Image 1 (tube, rainbow, N blue to C red):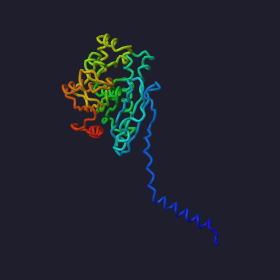
Image 2: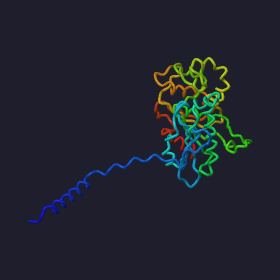
Image 3: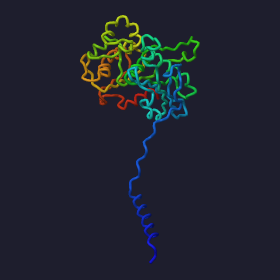
Image 4: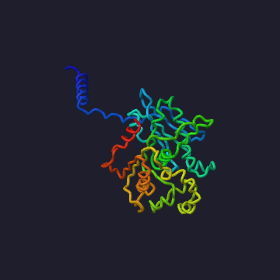
Length: 309
């Protein structure tokens, strides 16, 4: 009788092949997060004055999404900006920035501290624009995007008069700080404590931007701070020549009523600025609590595609 070992081995091979044929194909590995084309590029001397740039593949110069992360100007990071993959897949390059936080500004003696956060964002935008030819994007098609304090910041950039200084000895300062459009997630739209408390009675936010210890101190010192507030607040800055904006909030507004949760990101911030946007004629939409039924841009990203491309 011939030995059984070769026969058994052959059966095992056949059984294994059959099992492989019947088993489902392995699930594809999740797509990797895109890697910056240029990472941690300095736009200033401070360690936090760095940005990442992601180049979209295109024959012609691409539009650009300029992303500012949130975190109350106290925390956060430029990694994984919103819409990153969608932008790159649709031929839109992305720049995502870090910037000095309020404690960094206080350590440097900058008054008010929030000025450093906003100045850094403007400088980063100018720096990125100075790289337009090298990085193959169109400096005239730049849209801003950010969440919470980052949303405030891109609204500030969108509404502030152009900070370009053509007479400066610094060529980067010649670049524009204007944006083609702005998409902001749960942004604060004012830094006026009186206005904010009227909109959101239980709000305790914004005093830190001026290095103050409490909301009450902020209210008490409002009059002396008004020159700064008027320079910073999107509400105060909004004017007829400003770009289209899309604001997104994950709660419905009830202006003048205290929200049950998360007053810092309340939809009342959207309702509060809505009248000003309409009055001065800025094209705008405000999405509350994922209510897309009446939105022109139900996908949110469609707003960028139309305004930048």
